[in-house]
Length: 46
Image 1: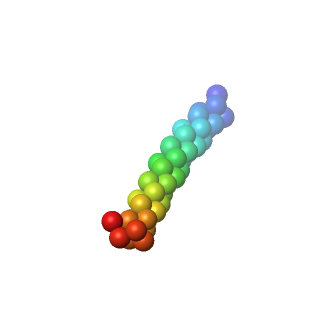
Image 2: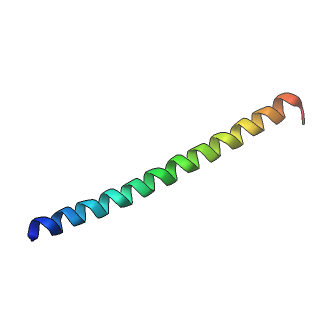
């Protein structure tokens, strides 16, 4: 039973880390899209 509790704790940490990784990737993609949009506006003079 102790092993199951240990695996449960590890699974919870993995879930938390996965969610954080997805959030960071999403933030990075949003930031990149904003930079591309800014670059396009700068190049076109808009």
